[in-house]
Length: 123
Image (cartoon, rainbow, N blue to C red; front, side, top):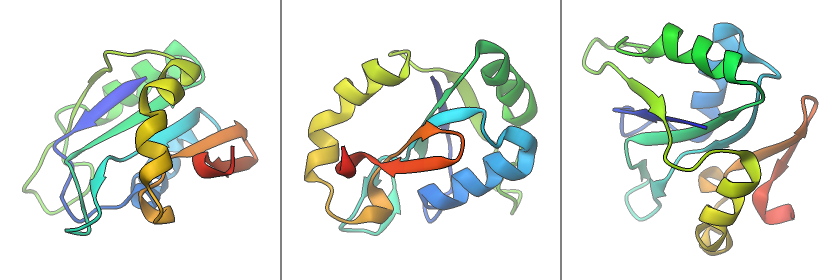
């Protein structure tokens, strides 16, 4: 699990996932969560992404760390290992947050396989 920090405040989870996919990581991650403040319709400046192998995580870190991934020149992202590692450990860690989130834009995506995304609320 990687934590990506310094995200532009207006970016949403689907945009992070689009950037991951355009960067060549389609099918390489199984979890994407962007903590947000629904009242302000913005994110908290970070995302958590779980990769299916350590090699994919290292590749993302090499490709994105200290770079202006989202354009605009104002913000370079910081990519580092998250404190909690693994899909199941993070599902348990964020479970109470997931239950409170009613707006699907702020819910995490958990991929049951590379072709089947599932909202955490559907589990």
